Length: 321
Image (cartoon, rainbow, N blue to C red; front, side, top):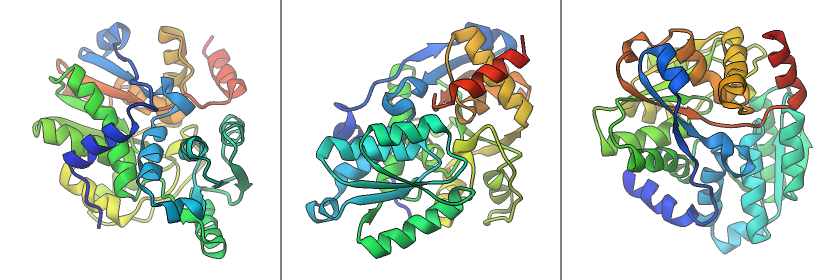
C-alpha cells in the first residue's frame, strides 16, 4: 500500500533542492495559439541527467539507512531512472548496479556508465529487466530501488508539480507522461493538495497502454505491447500505483506513434529542444486534438526528458523537412 502525502513531497523538496535544477516554467505561445489554451511547459528535459527521474532517485537514496547504502543499490529501468539512481549513488559513493532492457537507447546507457554505475543489459522490455534485477538483488543483497512503486520515489517526482504551482498557482489542468506511474502519482498528490479542482491527465501511447485500460476497468488490465518511440513509458504498472491513481488522477489518453514523432519534431522546430518520445507525448496529445475540453483553459504540460539518441531525432526531423 503506497502512502504519499503533501508532507512527503515537501520533505522531498527539502532533501533534494540543493542537488537538482529548478527547471524553467515557460509559456509556449506557439502551442497556446494552436490549441486555443494558455499552455505552459515545465522543462524537465533541462534537469540534471536529462529527466525528472533524478528527483525521485535522490529522495529515495537520501532516505536509505547506512546499512542499506552499505550493501549497494540495484534497479531496473528503461534508462532515465537508471541515470538518476547512478547519479544519486555517485554523490554518496554508493555502489550501483543497473539493469536495462535491450531497448534502452545508447544515450541512456552512456549516461549510466558516465556516473560510475555498473550496467547490465537484460531482457526485451522493462518487465523482463525488472524481474532479472530482483533476482540479482536477492543474490547480491543489494537494496532494490523501484522505479515507480515506492513512496519516496513518488514524493520526489511530486516536486515537479510543487515547483510549477508555487510559480503559477492557477493552472486548470496538468498533462503528464505516464509510464510506471511515479511521476503522475507524485504530481497528482501535490497538485490536488494545493488545488483539489485541478485536472490531472496522463498520456500514454497505443504501443504501451496499461494505464489507459487499467484505469478504465479499475483493475490491472492485460494489454498488448509493441515498439514505441516513447521507450521510457514502456512496460507494465503496479497495483499500488493504480490504487493511488484511482483516487487522484482524472483520466488517461492515448496518442499514436506518428503523433509522438511529430511532437518531437515540433519541439525541436519551435523551441529548439531535443526531447525524447516519452517527454513529447503531452505535446502530441495537445497538438493532435486529443484534449479538446482544455480549450480556453490554463494548462501545464510536463516535458519529462531529453534523453533521445541524436541520430534517431535527426531522422525524425529530416522526415518532416
